[in-house]
Image (cartoon, rainbow over all chains, first blue to last red; front, side):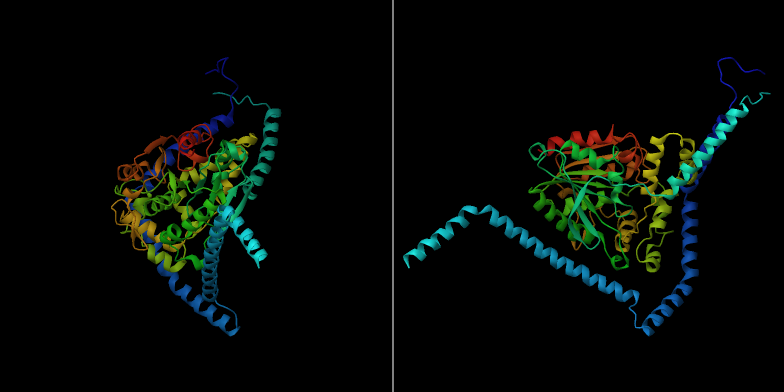
Length: 130
Length: 359
């Protein structure tokens, strides 16, 4: 078997890439079919459930130990920090309410320049009369 | 048998190139790309959420009077909308003359585990939109929601139809879950196999790593193998390397999703399909798609494996707007808006629809 003149020299890298891509295409389709199956959904659900069940006692021990240690050290626990953060957000909301009111006031002041300008002149004329 | 005709010199230079490529690969895989470079300023903030205004580049008199607010998903970062100079949707729209704003939900902490769609739609969004209207000096605005951002914007449009919303653009919106065989996600989160409460009891928020696994496992070979081989094959091409680097940075910038919102997504939408059935309630208010009055553009990605077209197209007859349009775009869930073809196909189509409705 010989190479024809118009085909380039044999390139082992190109051949390897071509084989690789063909193999990956087949593998990809197989995997997509697999993850789309009910069996995969059931299996991943079971694995997740088992992991949650198995790790639950360990998590509880770590959590209660950590709370005890932090309490002994007079340090805030995670729930203390969370509660503080929630209060901060509530304060931010009140600030945002105030910001909304200020924006409304500013807009009203800007939209009524004529009425605002007439009032001082009335006061000035009243002062002159006095 | 064909004998290898690669000369020793050529083989040597190839090996040298492999060495250089390894250095490039190391750089790309270990350093983040500077995504989200378009100049912007924070105009509003609440808890982790921030409202950004992008610095306009078109003179005010030539700009469209109706501002555009972008709302991305609660998972992953919104920097995908401003991925890199020359390939940024934000940059494209500000050059078209839009006053562009972005609502960044931020990264929820343990204190945010109870945040629900109710809070995002009826607390955060109205406040951010109030500020947007003040800053933009406009009573009307357009909303663009992508993925879960499209759920939030749809709910907002249904619950606050008189709040000045003129245009609603939905991108790959997961809204209709009536077909339980539509895609893999809906099977994975079937109530027979997936107990969302057990997970959230342990994690509080839905961890970014689990969300990432869920997205990548839909196409495992592409995401875990072919993606990296594509980089390896193109290490000689700086343009492809830069594009890959930016996308990889975004993909690996994982964020958790607030537990309350994740539970709603799984139980009320994926499992119970409450929105389409007209049973979704936020803070006691029923979200009726028939109440939507804004002009609606619903953009579907034909090859979307995360939100298959079947989860989007069915809502069109339920939307109350008189002016509504559904368009199909070639591409995947992310590629449609951030891929190499987005600038030529998706963005011009959205712009052509939005421009006449923003005057």
